[in-house]
Image (cartoon, rainbow, N blue to C red; front, side):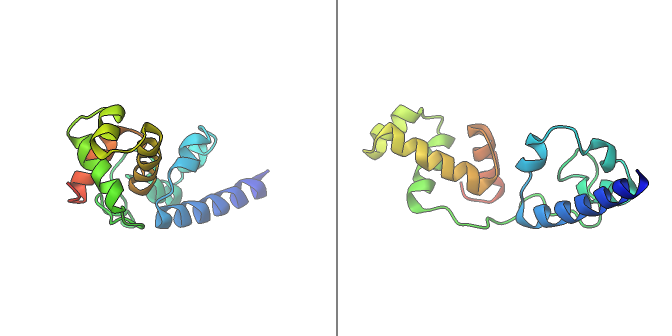
Length: 132
C-alpha cells in the first residue's frame, strides 16, 4: 500500500544516513536488490549516490578518503606493507615469524578496518589514506 511504501522510504532513509555515518555498506550490498526501486526516488538517490550506488555524489556525500574509524595496529600495518609488496600469505607468515592463521586473522582485521574485501582493495585504500 502507499502507506507502507512511504514508511519503507522513511526507514530506508534513516538506515542509509546511519550506515553512511558509520561507513557500513556491506549490509546493503549483501541484501541484494530489494532497495533498488526505492533508491530511484530523489531524496534516497541523493543519500546513496557515490557511496552506495554509482553516480555523482550528492551534497551529503562522504569524501573519498575518509579517515579510519579504528586505527591499524602495528602488526596489521606490517601485514599491509607486505600485501603491497605482493607477498603471499605464507610468505608474510614466514617473514613475520607467525603462523599462516595469524596472518589471516590480521588480514581480516585490516579488511574490516579499511572497509574492503580484497587484497588489492586494501592496498588501494591504504594508499588513499597515506598508510603506505
